[in-house]
Image 1 (cartoon, rainbow, N blue to C red):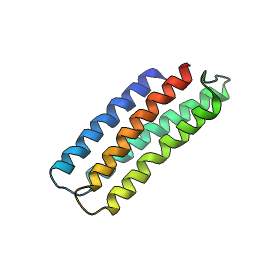
Image 2: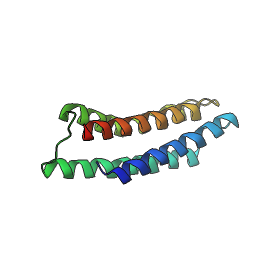
Image 3: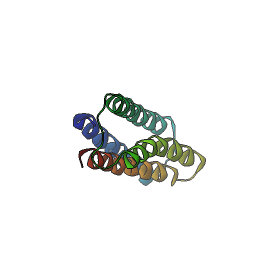
Image 4: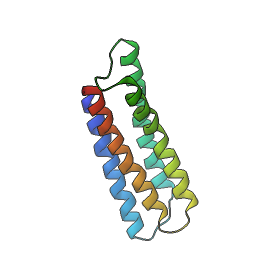
Length: 119
């Protein structure tokens, strides 16, 4: 794990969670802006996954266990697309709240990946 990348991702998804909650408070539906924000978050996660695969292929190993780390890594890639699709399907004000929950879960997964990697 690269701490600077993980920190940037955590801050980014927390800011995007805040944006989602503002849209919820304004009674807005999930739109292009929020979907684009989720896509940017997913792109950052893809960079992290590629970096982790390169590190693992180079012989580095997570101190807290390989299976747990791979589970968090795979889970982090699934959360945002599922939350975005669910939020888009929810045609009420709660759609952005679902996306906000996805961003918050993603932040927690990144923190857990850091903890597992560093032991």
